[in-house]
Length: 221
Image (cartoon, rainbow, N blue to C red; front, side, top):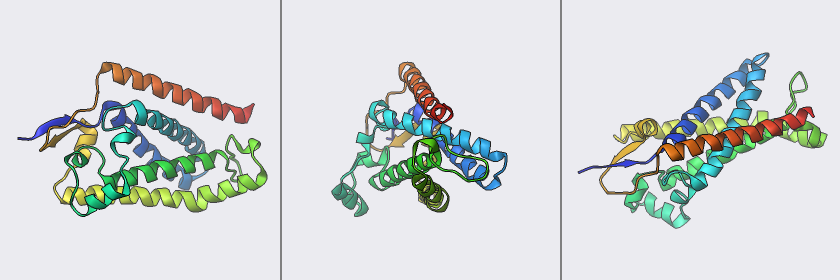
């Protein structure tokens, strides 16, 4: 009999879909250019707020959203690739999927930070350009437009491809990220997802957004 396990708490689900929508919108506004760049900057600040939230939520969030739940050793990854995984690997992020998650979060952070220090030499400049040298601005601008964006797009494409692959293998990864629950063959602990944790997550995101707002305001000081 399948066991219903709350894997993804509501804050994690909202983070996931808001981040996905924001990244897509960032790519679109970057290529549209012009007045759309105003929204590109705003979306960048939104993504930074989300990343800060996920960093903290990865320490205090629901059971399967914590980094400790999917921080695997190379030996564990190797055993998983050989088909010797443990039952809990089917709950949250698998050892292979965890690497993808950490890579995406890391490169998204690098992309946003480089954007804060970038200057397109036309109409828009990141709020932190005034605090770094012109050489740093040049390198950040180059990375942001010539390197980072393609890495992020590539990782997103791989993420979507993995979802389609698992769907082909009759393993739906989308539904749990929408509804929160997974039907698993083994009894495993659920993530906490009650009113208290949700309110705490909302307050945490508010603090993260305020922190980003303060950081951005330094550019206009």
